Image (cartoon, rainbow, N blue to C red; front, side, top):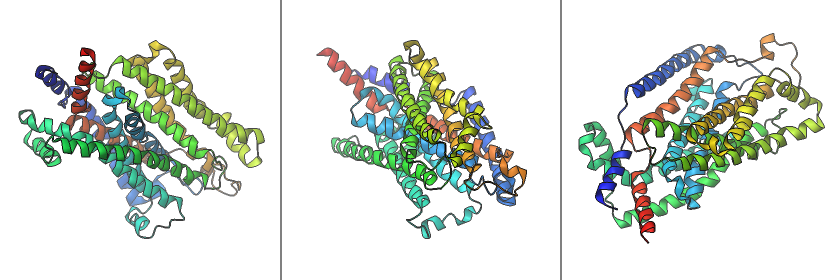
Length: 438
Protein backbone atom coordinates (compact mmCIF):
# COMPACT_ATOMS: atom_id res chain seq x y z
CA UNK A 1 0.00 0.00 0.00
CA UNK A 2 1.31 3.45 -0.87
CA UNK A 3 2.04 5.90 1.95
CA UNK A 4 -0.64 8.34 0.77
CA UNK A 5 -3.44 5.81 1.21
CA UNK A 6 -2.08 4.71 4.58
CA UNK A 7 -2.01 8.32 5.79
CA UNK A 8 -5.58 8.78 4.58
CA UNK A 9 -6.77 5.78 6.61
CA UNK A 10 -4.99 7.17 9.68
CA UNK A 11 -6.54 10.63 9.18
CA UNK A 12 -10.00 9.10 8.76
CA UNK A 13 -9.78 6.93 11.87
CA UNK A 14 -7.97 9.16 14.36
CA UNK A 15 -10.18 10.36 17.24
CA UNK A 16 -12.19 13.49 16.50
CA UNK A 17 -12.99 16.42 18.77
CA UNK A 18 -16.56 16.96 19.93
CA UNK A 19 -18.63 19.27 17.78
CA UNK A 20 -21.58 21.28 19.05
CA UNK A 21 -23.87 18.25 18.96
CA UNK A 22 -21.29 16.16 20.79
CA UNK A 23 -20.97 18.75 23.55
CA UNK A 24 -24.76 18.88 23.98
CA UNK A 25 -24.81 15.07 24.12
CA UNK A 26 -22.10 14.97 26.81
CA UNK A 27 -23.74 17.77 28.82
CA UNK A 28 -27.10 15.95 28.71
CA UNK A 29 -25.57 12.69 29.91
CA UNK A 30 -23.69 14.45 32.68
CA UNK A 31 -26.92 16.17 33.76
CA UNK A 32 -28.65 12.78 34.03
CA UNK A 33 -25.68 11.44 36.02
CA UNK A 34 -25.79 14.46 38.35
CA UNK A 35 -29.51 13.88 39.05
CA UNK A 36 -28.75 10.20 39.71
CA UNK A 37 -25.94 11.14 42.10
CA UNK A 38 -28.33 13.43 44.00
CA UNK A 39 -30.94 10.65 44.18
CA UNK A 40 -28.33 8.20 45.41
CA UNK A 41 -27.25 10.72 48.05
CA UNK A 42 -30.85 10.76 49.28
CA UNK A 43 -30.89 6.95 49.29
CA UNK A 44 -27.69 6.83 51.36
CA UNK A 45 -29.04 9.40 53.81
CA UNK A 46 -32.60 8.10 54.23
CA UNK A 47 -32.00 4.44 53.40
CA UNK A 48 -33.84 2.18 50.98
CA UNK A 49 -37.19 3.52 52.20
CA UNK A 50 -36.92 6.20 49.46
CA UNK A 51 -37.34 3.35 46.95
CA UNK A 52 -40.59 1.48 46.25
CA UNK A 53 -38.97 -1.84 47.18
CA UNK A 54 -40.60 -3.63 50.10
CA UNK A 55 -40.56 -7.06 51.73
CA UNK A 56 -41.76 -8.84 48.59
CA UNK A 57 -40.20 -6.79 45.78
CA UNK A 58 -36.76 -6.62 47.34
CA UNK A 59 -35.21 -6.63 43.86
CA UNK A 60 -36.55 -3.86 41.67
CA UNK A 61 -35.33 -1.75 38.80
CA UNK A 62 -31.74 -1.90 40.06
CA UNK A 63 -31.47 -5.65 39.53
CA UNK A 64 -33.31 -5.29 36.20
CA UNK A 65 -30.56 -2.87 35.18
CA UNK A 66 -27.90 -5.25 36.47
CA UNK A 67 -29.24 -8.14 34.38
CA UNK A 68 -29.48 -5.82 31.34
CA UNK A 69 -25.87 -4.65 31.71
CA UNK A 70 -24.60 -8.20 32.18
CA UNK A 71 -26.56 -9.23 29.07
CA UNK A 72 -25.32 -6.50 26.74
CA UNK A 73 -21.72 -7.08 27.88
CA UNK A 74 -21.78 -10.51 26.19
CA UNK A 75 -21.32 -8.76 22.84
CA UNK A 76 -17.60 -8.52 23.60
CA UNK A 77 -17.20 -12.28 23.47
CA UNK A 78 -19.57 -12.61 20.48
CA UNK A 79 -17.84 -10.10 18.19
CA UNK A 80 -14.27 -10.10 19.52
CA UNK A 81 -13.82 -13.73 20.46
CA UNK A 82 -16.15 -15.89 18.37
CA UNK A 83 -15.76 -13.97 15.11
CA UNK A 84 -12.03 -13.41 15.62
CA UNK A 85 -11.34 -17.08 16.29
CA UNK A 86 -13.40 -18.15 13.27
CA UNK A 87 -11.32 -15.74 11.15
CA UNK A 88 -14.32 -13.62 10.08
CA UNK A 89 -12.55 -10.66 8.45
CA UNK A 90 -15.57 -8.39 8.02
CA UNK A 91 -15.92 -7.98 11.80
CA UNK A 92 -12.66 -5.99 12.18
CA UNK A 93 -14.31 -2.50 12.23
CA UNK A 94 -16.74 -3.73 14.89
CA UNK A 95 -14.40 -5.40 17.39
CA UNK A 96 -13.43 -2.27 19.32
CA UNK A 97 -17.02 -1.00 19.38
CA UNK A 98 -18.10 -4.35 20.85
CA UNK A 99 -15.33 -4.40 23.45
CA UNK A 100 -15.94 -0.88 24.75
CA UNK A 101 -19.66 -1.67 25.06
CA UNK A 102 -18.70 -4.82 27.00
CA UNK A 103 -16.31 -3.01 29.35
CA UNK A 104 -18.65 -0.08 30.06
CA UNK A 105 -21.62 -2.41 30.60
CA UNK A 106 -19.84 -4.77 32.98
CA UNK A 107 -18.46 -1.78 34.93
CA UNK A 108 -21.93 -0.41 35.56
CA UNK A 109 -23.33 -3.87 36.26
CA UNK A 110 -20.88 -3.98 39.17
CA UNK A 111 -21.77 -0.47 40.34
CA UNK A 112 -25.53 -0.99 40.23
CA UNK A 113 -25.16 -3.98 42.57
CA UNK A 114 -23.51 -1.68 45.13
CA UNK A 115 -26.35 0.82 44.63
CA UNK A 116 -28.85 -1.95 45.40
CA UNK A 117 -27.20 -2.64 48.74
CA UNK A 118 -28.69 -0.97 51.80
CA UNK A 119 -25.26 -0.82 53.42
CA UNK A 120 -22.74 -0.32 50.58
CA UNK A 121 -19.88 0.22 53.04
CA UNK A 122 -20.14 -3.50 53.80
CA UNK A 123 -19.45 -4.52 50.21
CA UNK A 124 -15.94 -5.67 51.12
CA UNK A 125 -17.52 -8.47 53.20
CA UNK A 126 -18.38 -10.24 49.94
CA UNK A 127 -14.65 -10.78 49.41
CA UNK A 128 -13.62 -11.32 53.04
CA UNK A 129 -16.50 -13.52 54.23
CA UNK A 130 -17.89 -14.82 50.96
CA UNK A 131 -19.13 -18.41 50.95
CA UNK A 132 -18.71 -20.59 47.87
CA UNK A 133 -22.11 -22.16 48.58
CA UNK A 134 -23.72 -18.85 47.59
CA UNK A 135 -24.51 -18.11 43.91
CA UNK A 136 -23.87 -14.42 44.69
CA UNK A 137 -20.18 -15.20 45.26
CA UNK A 138 -20.10 -17.15 42.00
CA UNK A 139 -21.43 -14.03 40.27
CA UNK A 140 -18.83 -11.78 41.92
CA UNK A 141 -16.02 -14.11 40.78
CA UNK A 142 -17.13 -14.44 37.16
CA UNK A 143 -17.98 -10.73 36.78
CA UNK A 144 -14.54 -9.73 38.08
CA UNK A 145 -12.83 -12.25 35.79
CA UNK A 146 -14.90 -11.19 32.77
CA UNK A 147 -14.14 -7.49 33.43
CA UNK A 148 -10.37 -7.98 33.43
CA UNK A 149 -10.35 -10.26 30.37
CA UNK A 150 -12.53 -7.75 28.47
CA UNK A 151 -10.22 -4.91 29.52
CA UNK A 152 -7.17 -6.79 28.23
CA UNK A 153 -8.97 -7.67 24.97
CA UNK A 154 -9.63 -3.96 24.57
CA UNK A 155 -6.08 -2.90 25.44
CA UNK A 156 -3.86 -5.36 23.54
CA UNK A 157 -5.22 -4.62 20.02
CA UNK A 158 -5.01 -0.91 20.90
CA UNK A 159 -1.21 -0.95 21.34
CA UNK A 160 -0.21 -0.46 17.66
CA UNK A 161 -2.78 2.35 17.39
CA UNK A 162 -1.30 4.07 20.45
CA UNK A 163 2.05 4.13 18.65
CA UNK A 164 0.39 5.82 15.68
CA UNK A 165 -1.32 8.43 17.88
CA UNK A 166 1.92 9.19 19.73
CA UNK A 167 3.38 10.08 16.32
CA UNK A 168 0.62 12.67 15.77
CA UNK A 169 1.68 14.77 18.75
CA UNK A 170 0.66 18.07 17.18
CA UNK A 171 -2.99 17.01 16.97
CA UNK A 172 -3.34 16.25 20.67
CA UNK A 173 -3.38 18.30 23.81
CA UNK A 174 -0.37 17.83 26.05
CA UNK A 175 -2.19 15.78 28.71
CA UNK A 176 -3.66 13.52 26.04
CA UNK A 177 -0.28 12.95 24.40
CA UNK A 178 1.21 12.09 27.80
CA UNK A 179 -1.67 9.68 28.39
CA UNK A 180 -0.92 7.92 25.08
CA UNK A 181 2.77 7.74 26.00
CA UNK A 182 1.91 6.28 29.42
CA UNK A 183 -0.24 3.56 27.84
CA UNK A 184 1.83 2.73 24.79
CA UNK A 185 5.43 3.97 25.07
CA UNK A 186 6.72 0.40 25.48
CA UNK A 187 5.31 -0.58 22.08
CA UNK A 188 8.10 -0.49 19.46
CA UNK A 189 6.37 -2.15 16.46
CA UNK A 190 8.77 -5.09 16.63
CA UNK A 191 7.80 -8.47 15.08
CA UNK A 192 8.39 -10.20 18.42
CA UNK A 193 5.88 -7.87 20.10
CA UNK A 194 3.28 -8.54 17.41
CA UNK A 195 3.82 -12.29 17.82
CA UNK A 196 3.40 -12.18 21.62
CA UNK A 197 0.39 -9.86 21.40
CA UNK A 198 -1.31 -12.02 18.77
CA UNK A 199 -0.80 -15.09 20.93
CA UNK A 200 -2.09 -13.28 24.03
CA UNK A 201 -5.21 -12.06 22.17
CA UNK A 202 -5.97 -15.60 20.99
CA UNK A 203 -5.58 -16.97 24.54
CA UNK A 204 -7.88 -14.23 25.89
CA UNK A 205 -10.39 -14.80 23.08
CA UNK A 206 -10.53 -18.50 23.90
CA UNK A 207 -10.71 -17.82 27.65
CA UNK A 208 -13.50 -15.24 27.47
CA UNK A 209 -16.00 -17.59 25.80
CA UNK A 210 -16.45 -20.00 28.77
CA UNK A 211 -16.22 -17.05 31.18
CA UNK A 212 -18.91 -15.18 29.22
CA UNK A 213 -21.17 -18.24 29.23
CA UNK A 214 -20.47 -18.64 32.95
CA UNK A 215 -21.37 -15.05 33.83
CA UNK A 216 -24.78 -15.32 32.19
CA UNK A 217 -25.43 -18.82 33.46
CA UNK A 218 -24.46 -17.87 37.01
CA UNK A 219 -26.62 -14.73 36.82
CA UNK A 220 -29.53 -16.92 35.75
CA UNK A 221 -28.80 -19.24 38.69
CA UNK A 222 -29.28 -16.31 41.08
CA UNK A 223 -32.90 -16.46 39.98
CA UNK A 224 -33.33 -20.17 39.31
CA UNK A 225 -31.98 -21.19 42.75
CA UNK A 226 -34.51 -18.85 44.41
CA UNK A 227 -37.72 -20.80 44.88
CA UNK A 228 -40.28 -18.57 43.17
CA UNK A 229 -42.89 -19.10 40.42
CA UNK A 230 -41.41 -18.06 37.09
CA UNK A 231 -37.84 -18.64 38.21
CA UNK A 232 -38.05 -22.34 39.05
CA UNK A 233 -36.71 -23.34 35.65
CA UNK A 234 -33.85 -25.42 34.23
CA UNK A 235 -34.14 -23.40 31.01
CA UNK A 236 -32.88 -20.17 32.58
CA UNK A 237 -29.20 -20.50 31.63
CA UNK A 238 -29.82 -20.91 27.91
CA UNK A 239 -32.67 -18.37 28.10
CA UNK A 240 -30.33 -15.72 29.54
CA UNK A 241 -27.45 -16.46 27.17
CA UNK A 242 -29.60 -16.32 24.02
CA UNK A 243 -31.16 -13.05 25.18
CA UNK A 244 -27.72 -11.62 25.98
CA UNK A 245 -26.41 -12.42 22.50
CA UNK A 246 -29.45 -10.68 21.02
CA UNK A 247 -29.28 -7.44 23.02
CA UNK A 248 -25.48 -7.26 22.62
CA UNK A 249 -25.71 -7.57 18.84
CA UNK A 250 -28.52 -4.98 18.82
CA UNK A 251 -26.34 -2.59 20.81
CA UNK A 252 -23.48 -2.98 18.32
CA UNK A 253 -25.80 -2.22 15.37
CA UNK A 254 -26.98 0.97 17.11
CA UNK A 255 -23.37 2.02 17.85
CA UNK A 256 -22.31 1.20 14.27
CA UNK A 257 -24.92 3.57 12.87
CA UNK A 258 -24.17 6.41 15.31
CA UNK A 259 -20.39 6.30 14.79
CA UNK A 260 -20.74 5.84 11.04
CA UNK A 261 -22.99 8.87 10.72
CA UNK A 262 -21.31 11.30 13.12
CA UNK A 263 -17.68 10.28 12.52
CA UNK A 264 -18.17 9.92 8.74
CA UNK A 265 -16.98 6.32 8.64
CA UNK A 266 -19.01 5.22 5.62
CA UNK A 267 -15.89 3.80 3.93
CA UNK A 268 -15.14 1.55 6.89
CA UNK A 269 -18.56 0.61 8.29
CA UNK A 270 -20.29 -0.27 5.05
CA UNK A 271 -23.70 -1.48 3.90
CA UNK A 272 -22.22 -4.97 3.95
CA UNK A 273 -21.58 -4.73 7.71
CA UNK A 274 -25.21 -3.77 8.36
CA UNK A 275 -26.40 -6.54 6.06
CA UNK A 276 -24.34 -9.18 7.86
CA UNK A 277 -25.16 -7.92 11.36
CA UNK A 278 -28.83 -7.74 10.35
CA UNK A 279 -28.74 -11.43 9.44
CA UNK A 280 -27.00 -12.20 12.75
CA UNK A 281 -29.74 -10.27 14.60
CA UNK A 282 -32.50 -12.23 12.85
CA UNK A 283 -30.85 -15.53 13.79
CA UNK A 284 -30.39 -14.43 17.43
CA UNK A 285 -33.95 -13.06 17.66
CA UNK A 286 -35.35 -16.38 16.40
CA UNK A 287 -33.15 -18.26 18.88
CA UNK A 288 -34.32 -16.08 21.77
CA UNK A 289 -37.93 -16.43 20.62
CA UNK A 290 -37.53 -20.22 20.78
CA UNK A 291 -36.28 -20.06 24.38
CA UNK A 292 -39.13 -17.69 25.30
CA UNK A 293 -41.67 -20.16 23.92
CA UNK A 294 -39.91 -22.94 25.81
CA UNK A 295 -39.82 -20.85 28.99
CA UNK A 296 -43.56 -20.15 29.04
CA UNK A 297 -45.15 -23.06 27.14
CA UNK A 298 -44.20 -25.83 29.57
CA UNK A 299 -45.46 -24.18 32.80
CA UNK A 300 -48.53 -22.86 30.92
CA UNK A 301 -49.35 -26.39 29.70
CA UNK A 302 -49.14 -27.83 33.20
CA UNK A 303 -50.56 -24.65 34.81
CA UNK A 304 -49.65 -25.43 38.39
CA UNK A 305 -51.58 -23.30 40.82
CA UNK A 306 -48.44 -21.52 41.97
CA UNK A 307 -47.53 -20.60 38.36
CA UNK A 308 -51.05 -19.66 37.24
CA UNK A 309 -51.23 -16.19 38.78
CA UNK A 310 -47.76 -15.31 37.53
CA UNK A 311 -48.45 -16.41 33.93
CA UNK A 312 -51.89 -14.79 33.78
CA UNK A 313 -50.36 -11.57 35.09
CA UNK A 314 -47.91 -11.62 32.18
CA UNK A 315 -50.22 -12.69 29.37
CA UNK A 316 -53.51 -10.99 30.23
CA UNK A 317 -53.13 -9.17 33.55
CA UNK A 318 -51.31 -6.22 35.09
CA UNK A 319 -48.05 -6.77 33.20
CA UNK A 320 -49.57 -7.84 29.86
CA UNK A 321 -49.08 -4.47 28.02
CA UNK A 322 -45.42 -4.38 29.05
CA UNK A 323 -44.92 -8.09 28.30
CA UNK A 324 -46.31 -7.94 24.76
CA UNK A 325 -44.50 -4.65 24.14
CA UNK A 326 -41.19 -6.32 25.09
CA UNK A 327 -41.88 -9.42 23.00
CA UNK A 328 -42.82 -7.46 19.88
CA UNK A 329 -40.11 -4.77 20.12
CA UNK A 330 -37.27 -7.13 21.04
CA UNK A 331 -38.11 -9.94 18.61
CA UNK A 332 -41.09 -9.82 16.22
CA UNK A 333 -40.71 -6.30 14.77
CA UNK A 334 -36.88 -6.50 14.35
CA UNK A 335 -37.27 -9.88 12.60
CA UNK A 336 -39.87 -8.42 10.22
CA UNK A 337 -37.62 -5.43 9.45
CA UNK A 338 -34.38 -7.37 8.98
CA UNK A 339 -35.74 -10.32 6.99
CA UNK A 340 -35.75 -8.16 3.86
CA UNK A 341 -32.62 -6.74 2.18
CA UNK A 342 -33.96 -3.15 2.33
CA UNK A 343 -34.47 -3.59 6.08
CA UNK A 344 -30.77 -4.36 6.48
CA UNK A 345 -29.70 -0.95 5.19
CA UNK A 346 -28.13 1.32 7.83
CA UNK A 347 -31.15 3.31 9.05
CA UNK A 348 -33.73 0.47 9.17
CA UNK A 349 -31.11 -1.75 10.82
CA UNK A 350 -30.46 1.02 13.37
CA UNK A 351 -34.20 1.19 14.17
CA UNK A 352 -34.32 -2.61 14.53
CA UNK A 353 -31.26 -2.58 16.82
CA UNK A 354 -32.77 0.21 18.93
CA UNK A 355 -36.02 -1.75 19.29
CA UNK A 356 -34.05 -4.82 20.38
CA UNK A 357 -32.19 -2.84 23.07
CA UNK A 358 -35.32 -1.10 24.41
CA UNK A 359 -37.44 -4.26 24.33
CA UNK A 360 -34.67 -6.25 26.00
CA UNK A 361 -34.43 -3.77 28.89
CA UNK A 362 -38.16 -4.13 29.59
CA UNK A 363 -37.80 -7.92 29.24
CA UNK A 364 -35.28 -7.86 32.11
CA UNK A 365 -37.67 -5.76 34.18
CA UNK A 366 -40.34 -8.43 33.58
CA UNK A 367 -38.01 -11.23 34.63
CA UNK A 368 -37.54 -9.58 38.03
CA UNK A 369 -40.72 -7.79 39.14
CA UNK A 370 -43.79 -9.98 38.36
CA UNK A 371 -42.22 -13.05 39.94
CA UNK A 372 -41.50 -11.23 43.20
CA UNK A 373 -45.13 -10.09 43.34
CA UNK A 374 -46.38 -13.69 43.09
CA UNK A 375 -44.70 -15.72 45.85
CA UNK A 376 -45.64 -19.32 46.56
CA UNK A 377 -47.17 -18.28 49.88
CA UNK A 378 -49.95 -15.75 49.06
CA UNK A 379 -49.67 -12.29 50.56
CA UNK A 380 -51.82 -11.83 53.68
CA UNK A 381 -52.29 -8.88 56.03
CA UNK A 382 -49.87 -6.55 54.23
CA UNK A 383 -50.37 -2.95 53.08
CA UNK A 384 -51.91 -2.49 49.63
CA UNK A 385 -48.63 -1.01 48.32
CA UNK A 386 -46.94 -4.41 48.83
CA UNK A 387 -49.13 -5.90 46.08
CA UNK A 388 -47.71 -3.56 43.43
CA UNK A 389 -44.36 -2.13 42.50
CA UNK A 390 -43.53 0.98 40.52
CA UNK A 391 -40.07 2.54 40.95
CA UNK A 392 -39.79 5.81 42.85
CA UNK A 393 -38.24 8.85 41.17
CA UNK A 394 -35.01 8.11 43.02
CA UNK A 395 -34.89 4.63 41.51
CA UNK A 396 -35.64 5.93 38.02
CA UNK A 397 -33.00 8.65 38.39
CA UNK A 398 -30.31 6.23 39.55
CA UNK A 399 -31.20 3.64 36.88
CA UNK A 400 -31.14 6.27 34.11
CA UNK A 401 -27.88 7.66 35.50
CA UNK A 402 -26.27 4.23 35.25
CA UNK A 403 -27.35 3.97 31.60
CA UNK A 404 -26.09 7.53 30.97
CA UNK A 405 -22.82 6.67 32.70
CA UNK A 406 -22.25 3.67 30.41
CA UNK A 407 -22.93 5.90 27.38
CA UNK A 408 -20.50 8.51 28.74
CA UNK A 409 -17.74 5.90 29.00
CA UNK A 410 -18.33 4.90 25.36
CA UNK A 411 -18.47 8.57 24.29
CA UNK A 412 -15.22 9.56 26.03
CA UNK A 413 -13.48 6.44 24.72
CA UNK A 414 -14.45 7.39 21.17
CA UNK A 415 -13.07 10.89 21.80
CA UNK A 416 -9.71 9.62 23.10
CA UNK A 417 -9.10 6.43 21.10
CA UNK A 418 -9.84 5.27 17.53
CA UNK A 419 -13.20 3.51 17.53
CA UNK A 420 -12.07 1.42 14.53
CA UNK A 421 -8.65 -0.33 14.79
CA UNK A 422 -6.26 1.69 12.59
CA UNK A 423 -3.41 -0.80 12.33
CA UNK A 424 -5.69 -3.77 11.58
CA UNK A 425 -7.56 -1.74 8.96
CA UNK A 426 -4.28 -0.84 7.21
CA UNK A 427 -3.18 -4.49 7.20
CA UNK A 428 -6.54 -5.68 5.85
CA UNK A 429 -6.58 -3.01 3.12
CA UNK A 430 -3.05 -3.99 2.14
CA UNK A 431 -3.96 -7.69 2.11
CA UNK A 432 -7.06 -6.98 0.01
CA UNK A 433 -5.01 -4.98 -2.51
CA UNK A 434 -2.44 -7.78 -2.78
CA UNK A 435 -5.23 -10.31 -3.44
CA UNK A 436 -6.61 -8.11 -6.20
CA UNK A 437 -3.12 -7.72 -7.68
CA UNK A 438 -2.60 -11.48 -7.88
